[in-house]
Image (cartoon, rainbow, N blue to C red; front, side):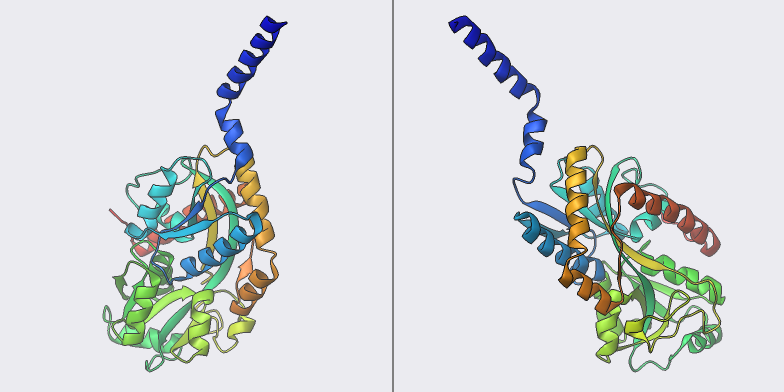
Length: 324
């Protein structure tokens, strides 16, 4: 009897030691989760990440820390996350800049598809072109005429080389047949500060970020992407209605992690974040800013990333943009 108990105990210990990852998964989350934002604090992606972190933390009763890792058009933060331990504790708050970098960068330190585990698509909203409230440019026609009169003189700020604010403006310039000067920053908040100060002439950003500032009178929206005006920014006409057709750039936000995450952790995060996106405060904030909550499955998110990589490759070729 004593020998049988000993053998059973030994087998139990061996089994527990053979499946440490299973025990760890059962406890997830058992320590703070890190949300990495690859751009500076204060920008649109940072605002969305902090809102999600707060609501998710409340829902799962676990701390979530937001960390900004800036540089290289978001690649520094992306590289950090995709090379982190795939345990679900280090997550990337990616944006539509991610597939742009994959499309135009000659060499990335990671594989944007093979090294990434999609979790959930969070939101999407059309981009808005902003100018300083005192700018003589009041609409898309004014921009077109001013740029044609003085090629390579008008400047625009962005969150960095290869950001959506960069490639999105290059696509607009290509459609308009004009040339503009790109001024890259480490984040959209820094670019916006210089827009207010008059150091740059314009800036492309999301409706989420621009809405409060347009309403506050600090900046003027001279055009919005897509075919319909947004109810929350009814005073901003689309580029389509101003005669520049086919401009449909959207800024999306999503959550991803490194490849190799346990499937049940991915499923847990996807389920909980889908619920967060239904939270009354989140829904109301998104609606007030004209943002559309997306949600859905990891597979649907990956489809968007793949499609965007191909789309931006085409745009980069037309605009002759390449990042070495």
